[in-house]
Amino acid sequence: MFSLPRNVWILTASLSLFMSLSVFVIFLGGIIGKSLAPSPALSTLPVAMIVVGTAISIIPVIHMMAKFGRKVTFLSVCIYTIAIIALAIISLKIESFYLFCLSAFLFGATTATMNQFRFAAVESVDKGLSATATSAVLFGGLISAFLGPEIATTGKDLFATEFVGSFLLLSICFIVAFTILQFYQQTEFKQSKHDDPTRALSKIVKQKVFIVAISSSAVGYVIMSYIMTATPMSMHIIDGFSLEQTKMVIQSHVIAMFLPSLFTPIIVRFLGVSKMMLTGVIIYFICIVIAYSGHALNNYWVSLILLGLGWNLLFIGGTSLLPHSYSENEKFKVQSVNDFLIFTLQAIASLSAGWFVFNFGWEVVLLSIVPLLVIQLIVLLYWINTKHI
Image (cartoon, rainbow, N blue to C red; front, side, top):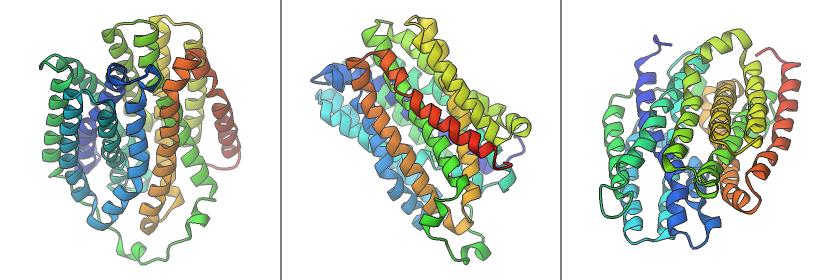
């Protein structure tokens, strides 16, 4: 892993800063929402809006990358994000729930851009190293597990209005990211492949490898986002755990999402990508059992760690499989479809999480994802019996 090109490590450092925004909003979104929202059921709307914004922004962001290149897009989005942070601060100052939701929605373009870092890393290495490059970049998320919540709590009381200082500290992350990304080297198309004819999208999406790749990434993201969005509401607002306890659980979860990336190349070598994803599904089932068995702090803590681990195996597996479904000159088209579908489904999950947990309770939130896991288990078992990746 440590012999990977410099580009990969630049993207890793940048991802840690970009992702601090996502962790920050997931941690604080529902809490700020609860203080500003006209109804408790709307508390998680800011968290859902960043996911909706991500889904809507994916295609424009990728089109921008196709036209201007990844580097220009990465740098432009750093500046854009700082401007939206200013808008979020204004919403806090005037206590406007809907302006805060708009800010969260506009942050979606930032996370849509962030999710292209993994593809930029894959393009910087040979195809055989795609899983290693993906896991290396996602390892940057480990830093965000500490950075996002720490910024949120450290800046909480710096000014008269709660959390204004937190957003100001967050803006510094994007100033640093802008500086780091100056050293990113744009990868170029290989001309021979660029001149090859592209296939119709309808033909590409019918490939088994595409279906397995996108279903694994989507299921991994949907379930993770759904439970993680509901957790602060269930823990802090319904069960009365402190903000520090809730922060510890969320931080542990995000660490579990990215720490396994150190060992993913070893897992791929011994299990293969498909069995790695199957292991992720099994871990998700164990997560649900533990979370369902009680509302104690340890139940939340252990289940959220398993939730992060399951996501890592499913998402890295799906991401590393996807390049097997397209050629070089088809990549932007396929990546657009892949991420649009994943984050549209994630947006639906996030939007429904708050409503489900407040109206039906934590247990119903957990049981509602079992059918999706069963379907993905069947898909992977069929794939394992018919392929060799």
